[in-house]
Amino acid sequence: MHVRSQHGPRTGQAGERGGSAAGWIPVGALLPLRFFVGFTFLYAGIDKIALDTAFLDLSSPTSILAQLQGYARSSPLAPLITTIAEPNAWLMGLTIALAEIAVGLAILTGLAFRLGAVGGASLSLLFFLTASWNVHPYYFGQDLPYGLGFVTLALAGHGDRYVLGPWLERQFAPRARAGRRVTGTPAMSPERRLLLQAGAVAVGALVIGAVVRPVRDLLMPVSAVPVGAGAGAGTGTGAASSGASAGAGAGASAGASASSAPSGASGQSGSASQLVIATTAAVAQAGAYGFQVPIAIGNASPGDPGIVVSLGNNQFVAFDAICTHAGCTVGYDPQAGLLICPCHGAEYDPRHNAQPVAGPTNIPLTELPIAIQGGEITLKA
Image 1 (cartoon, rainbow, N blue to C red):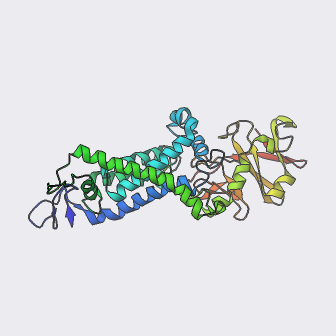
Image 2: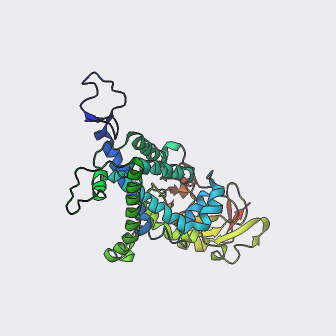
Image 3: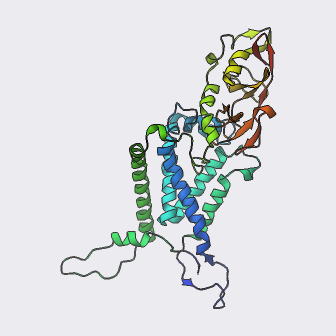
């Protein structure tokens, strides 16, 4: 069945009565797109509030604050991120999650449908300018396809298929009173209809946001909640791989301050151009060791988290630990032998100059030149 628009008449195939095919929309063909993006955004918002315990925990290396700090390094929205988003990171994360839930509800129920689709497109554009900005080529990123999907739905409408609008309007229609009979449903103005539907979506999003975390705590032990498994329409949204979750602990150590390195880590060794970052024994025992980059080296900036990895046979390599996708701190997964971003699952091979082998980037980590002498690993300027 084809429909001219969500307000247009129903009829058969477009050319049956000599009419033009222009303007006719195959509603059934839009349903998979509608339900996919609607469910994905609804799940992404719930995930940020309830399932990903690290997202709103500002002390976590995968929190919204850590991600915003990463985005600020290269996003064209960097001034807004540093002045507005970072100081209000928790509120920003909660707002994004609730907005995703609202968009998902609007698309799935058909309430304030076009407004919800515009909201989804706007969120996708925001995610593209932040989380996906460093993805090259651009078609590796997921946010532009989501955005164009929402634009398609905003232009097409829902075609009066699987919508709750008529039911909701009946609930607010005048009721019969004693001695009187109300026949039919009075026409509702478009403005009042939009306000009613948008209000219902907003209330629904707030209710879901308020109950999902207590329900999670009731049904799932805290230790069983997956950390870093968030979806991508918000906030940003791909799920981290299992390897990324395993590497999260190493990522935290990689982002630690220089005090976690040996006592000589911030001192000079031999010359002013070399700095001790670790001992070979410590790195060989742990497999990887986190430090803080003390000076500008290549694309690495002072204060960046760094990580040095043991390759065995007294061979070591060091890299700037900032993921080239969205700026989170990578960690080392000893089982996989890879550097893994706990935010979006990018994986880098330290044996091959930290070239990406999986995830949403094709840019390697910045390699840091090192030298080994007397059991110490020094960073060369």
